[in-house]
Amino acid sequence: MSILSFLSTTQIGQLSTTAIANWTTSDLRQLSSTQASALSTTQIGVLTTTQVAGLQTTQLSGLATTTVAALTSTQLNAISTANLTGLSTTQFSALTSTQVSGLSTTLVRSLNSTYVANLSTTQIGGLTTTQITALTTTQVQSLETTDVAALSTTQIVALTTAQIVALASTQFAAIETTDLAALTTTQFRVLTTTQIAGLSTTQVGVLTTTQIASLSTTQVRGIE
Image 1 (spheres, rainbow, N blue to C red):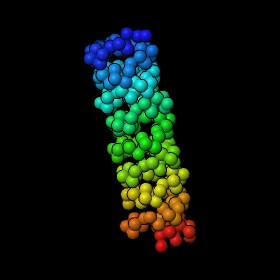
Image 2 (spheres, one colour; image 1 turned 90 degrees about the horizontal axis):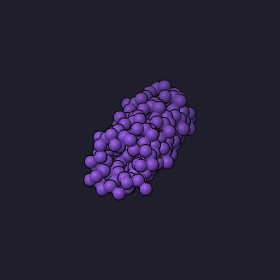
Image 3 (cartoon, rainbow, N blue to C red; image 1 turned 45 degrees about the vertical axis):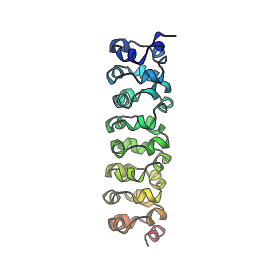
Image 4 (tube, one colour; image 1 turned 90 degrees about the vertical axis):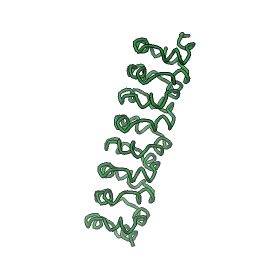
């Protein structure tokens, strides 16, 4: 067993970045969640992608939110989808929009419904169109109405037809009028009558003639 497992949190915090940079993945895995919580942002910053990839749920769960917020996108993407669950929703909520925008589509698709539901509007705004398109329909359905309202026009237009039709009527009704008017006819054609019926008179009023013309007879009845 490595001597690291016997170090106190105070001793962990006093370790030099040079020493930490030389840790093997086996060394890192000796750390308890309590010991991991003692790592500073400076110390965590010197970890290589190989070292970060070696972190398991035990170590990840112990990282302070400030430390999590200091991880680079490159480091975050080194975490496996299986070990990403080691981060609590509180830790995940500490990620900046820049960090979120740097997540690989593989990691984005691995986020469970709880993670997605806890994303802040700022984090949602950080998602790239590629990440938006990569979301599963289950993840899309997990978005809070405030999150849907926070989506930009570019993000809304990036939604696939499968994602659009998966939105609950309350989610669809949360789309801002400017964004609603930007929906493509391809997106509009897949709307359910329930989604259309959930629109307010103000929202219906911003629909373009092209959007209205793309609706089927059945869909038009949803407006009435």
